[in-house]
Length: 252
Ligand SMILES: Nc1ncnc2c1ncn2[C@@H]1O[C@H](COP(=O)(O)OP(=O)(O)O)[C@@H](O)[C@H]1O
Ligand SMILES: [Mg+2]
Image 1 (cartoon, rainbow, N blue to C red):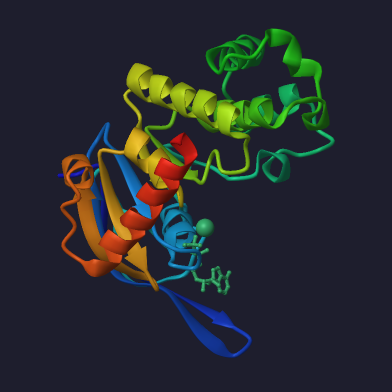
Image 2: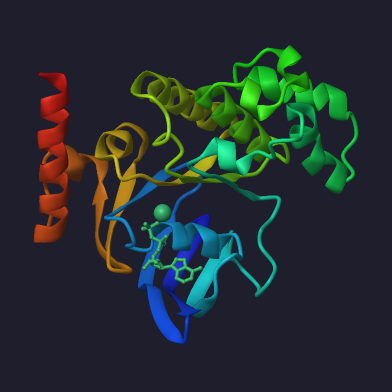
């Protein structure tokens, strides 16, 4: 049994009297401790899959199971699954101190030793303990994303859903945050489900990747398939070839 099982998942939004089929008949499994990527052009349904796993998108067909347990309507896997969003500025409350942001999940779940845990959470993501008393606007983009990661880890989840976690950051900072994520995954035995439009990031971080197009799964590729350009579909090939050209441009 896989840790995350997505079986024939469909998500349909009702928007202004129109149906938007954001995800159609998508299936994939993520093993415990694996890092699994979702790629595809904007609007292909990647974020919607992550939201569906958190119970934040209307599942119209199919099943989501975690450790074999089905996700019930309106009931996410709150403590086991946490999400990190693209824009850490938008996802952190501007008028709450970092201390408040990090201690809130503990308070909600009645977890003791808040002070000690908040300090450890900050140092675990490479920030000084004194940052507790700062506000988001007093931090750089990379530091804010470290806080967002610390917050996601407060309740010791098994799974992190990462939605373009570094695409709002400068290139040099991106690498630092990706390395931090890899180290945390290794240390804690975390499982990642990660969206990125940057195939260099996917290549660096993911064991397998699912290529999405117009809400459907096009092709699943393992790292070795990517390295040897073993794509079965023209769409996946064109996506990765376009990105390989960009990566070459960047290094020359
Ligand atoms: N809350 C919503 N209401 C209506 N349509 C939505 C909603 N969220 C997403 N969509 C639509 O679903 C499709 C997939 O969106 P999304 O999952 O955000 O794509 P991606 O993350 O791959 O860019 C898009 O057409 C988008 O406009
Ligand atoms: Mg998205």
